[in-house]
Structure formats: structure tokens, C-alpha cells
Length: 309
Length: 236
Ligand SMILES: Nc1ncnc2c1ncn2[C@@H]1O[C@H](COP(=O)(O)OP(=O)(O)OP(=O)(O)O)[C@@H](O)[C@H]1O
Ligand SMILES: [Mg+2]
Image 1 (spheres, rainbow over the protein chains, first blue to last red):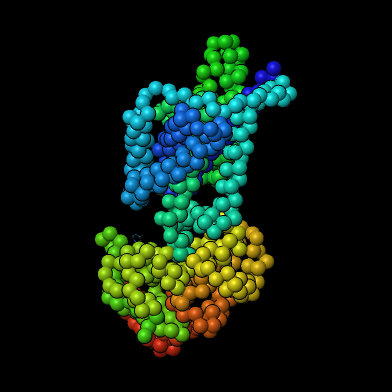
Image 2: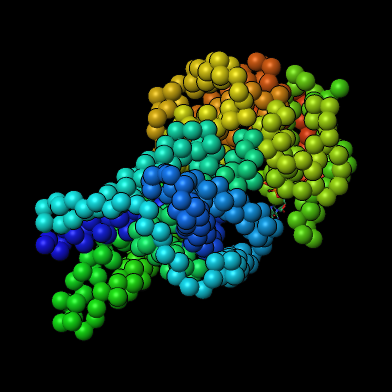
């Protein structure tokens, strides 16, 4: 078996998910300069909601192909997460728009704790298995294997990202989003309702997070009320790696981080003579984050951050 | 009836009374200028008209409706365009995208296209560079872009905040000429300028602002001959 190729494939799958979540962080940061720490929890809610729908459908014995069941789960999770993202901005961030920067940051952490605990109360503390409704097929490519689920994750993320890039670069809404990110005041002078644009940003980011949440839970076969924490932290690292505020950077950072992490997990045993096992893979994300912060704080594609006095 | 009428207007920054007791009006068909020294409160007045900073007191009537306290985007959609101090172009967007942003609130596609052609004709430099990032333009080109973008909204009233600031003399001349042309086409203009002489020469009426208050107002030709104005602003 070709370990290298295998880990690259696994890394791209993981990286696609990181990229989708990282986009949400970077879009909000680009407009509000706020790190929406509750974004990881939105992903978790997406996973939980879709899993609940999938379990209910699978358990009810309806005659539906597995793919359709999962699709129903996704299509339920997306509007739920969009509504959640919209509400969080309205209730928790908008009133603090002109407050010192630390205030919304602390609120974000607070919201994320509230969501974790709410999820724990609703769905319990245990790991919830994703019902095996999907037929997994394996394909051999050059000594490595790739499953139909992995292919679906990569292709669907790519489609979502292409859709987003199109929206941001080619539509009236996207133009208004970019204008607002560059100067909310001047955008307002052009007749842009900045509050609607900020809401739209949260809604779109949350929709992507919902898709990512379903993907992770289907891929690993389980979901957990605390899963958003680590996923969010890694996606945030990916956004910083790519240059926070930069959409291309978030996608690149996500894929790169996924591959680095996966390769790291594949080789850490050999590298340390068996001292550290692959469960240390989380270390790589944060190692990368630290390296970026030390050597290139603006990220791979970010513009140099001018120090605000 | 005046297109813009400001009464008893005041703006405070915390404890600083930047603008106080200002009365000012701009009528249809007019080009009016507001001159004053650094820190007199000119920019603050314009920002408060557009809702970018809150007014502490007073009323603003625009096109027959009170607009004080309204959101900036609602004021803009009523036909009031501001070319801000420092131009405020979207530097990471192309020239064309900047102009399209000017027409953001409009939905009449054919009209937008027609105005785009007009603006590009008015500023041929912008036409040449329309696919370039706006941040790569020179200062003069950026000023033209900011004005073109404001015109793309087809405004009833155009507020210009020191359009000649930081430009080479030849460009200053070009900007003033453009302002006069725009006004001649029927756009009502309120012009703020440090270059008092040129501003008074192209306008019909003028206001002089000092330490947040209007101290003098009248036909521009009178102000040009006013001894106080000549001494303080025309260097005579
Ligand atoms: N954001 C602010 N916070 C506090 N004070 C301010 C602020 N902006 C302006 N000021 C003060 O308000 C007064 C008026 O400033 P303003 O910018 O309106 O003047 P101006 O006439 O436009 O001057 P200039 O010709 O230099 O542009 C000045 O004393 C200035 O220091
Ligand atoms: Mg000023």
C-alpha cells in the first residue's frame, strides 16, 4: 500500500471539510474583524440535526435510498444552521458592534458554551453513531484506496466553494459584501444596507458549516456535542494559515492543513520511533498555527496586517 | 423650496462641539460652496448630513423629507451622494466594479448602462483602466473614480469633500472644470474646499465656516470681494 498517496487522499477529504468551515470564519472576520468562536458549534449543530433526521428516517423504515436519506438530512441541517447563525449575529454580536473588541470575542466564547450545553441536553453526552445508510464502495488507485463517500465529500465541497467564489465575485450581493468588507461607511454611502450584508454573511457561512458538519459525521460515522470545538479550532487555524479575511486563503489553508495533519498522522510513528502514535495528529494543526503566527502572521495569502493603534 | 435645508444644526464628538448652530440651504440648480480653515467642521457637517455621525441637534430636510436620524443607506437611496474626504474608493475592486457599486441601489439596467457610458466618456482615463484594481490608480484618477462612482447613483444632490486635496495643479484645474460641467448638466452640488478662490469662482453662493459656525454667507462674487474673506482665505 502506498502510505503517502493514501494519506494525501485522506488529507484532502479532511481538508475539504476544514476549508468549508474556515470560509465561515474568514468571511465574518473579513467584514467585522470578529472571530466567531461559535462557528465550530454551528457545524456541530449541523451534524446533530442531520443525524437526527437520518436516524429518524432510517428507523422509520421508509423506502428511500440511503443517499436520499442523507440528502434530506443535509437539506434540513442547512436552514437550521442558517437560522442559528443569523440569530447569533442579531442577538449576540450586533448589540456589541461598537463595543471594545474584547466584548464580542468573549460573547462568542459564551455563545459557543451555550450551544455545546444545549446540544448536550438535547442529544446527550454520548457519541451518537451515524446510521449505516450509505453503501460504501472502495476503489483502488495507484496502491491506495478511495471510497465513494470520500469522493462525494471532495466533489461536494468543491462545488460549494465554486458556488461561493462565484457569488462573491460575480453577483451584486457579492460585490456589496466585498465593498462592506473594505469600508462599511463608504458601502453605506452607496446605498448598501450593511446590516443585511452582515446577516447574509453569517447565513452563508452557517450554511457551509452545516454541510461540513454532515460530512464529518457521515465520514467518521459519529457525532458528539463537543465535536465542534476541535473542528472549529482547526478550521480557524486553517483560516489563519491561509490569511484570515481571504477566501482563497481559507480554502488553501483548509486543504493544506488537512494534508499536513494526515501525513503527520501517517508518519509520526516512524518519525518518533513508535514513541508517538497517530492519535497525536491534532498536534500538527496547532504546530502549524504556531509556526504561521511566528513566521508569517498575515498567513500565506493575507495582506500584511497593519497594526491598529 | 430648497433641495437641502439644514436648520439649527449641531454635531458633538463627546464633549467637543465640532459644529454648532449651522443654517444652510442648497436650492435646485445651484452649485454652492462651503469654505473654511482646517478643523472648521466642514467634513463633520457633511458626514452628519449623510448620517455617518449623529447630529446633536437640528433638522435636515432633503427633497421635502426630514432625513436626520435616518440610516446612511436610506439617505443615499433618496438621492444624496457624498464623495468623502480621502475619496473612499474600494481599492481592491476594479474601476468598473467601483462604478457599479455607485449604481448599487438602482435597478434600471438600461439607465445604468447609459450612465456608465457617460461617466467613462467624461473620464476617459477610467475607461482605459476599467479592469484595473482601483488601488493602482493615481491620486487624480482615484478622485475621478470617486466622482464618477457618485454620479452613477444619478444623485439629486452631490456633496464633494475637498476634491482637489493633494492633487497636482493641472489636475486641480481639471477637477474644478469637471465639477462645473456636472453642475451645468443639472446636478445640484455642495462643494467643500480649501482652495477657496477656485471654489468661489465656480459657485453661485458660498458659506464661510469658522470653528464650527457659519460666519459669512452670500453670493460667491460678493465673498470674493469681501475684505475678511480676501484676507483669511484668498491670501490677498
Ligand atoms: N472622530 C472625531 N472625534 C473627535 N473629534 C473630531 C473627530 N473628527 C473631527 N473632529 C474634530 O472636529 C473638528 C472639525 O473637524 P472636521 O474634520 O469636520 O474639519 P474640516 O473643516 O473638515 O477640516 P479639514 O479642512 O482639515 O478637513 C476638529 O476640531 C476635529 O479635530
Ligand atoms: Mg475635512
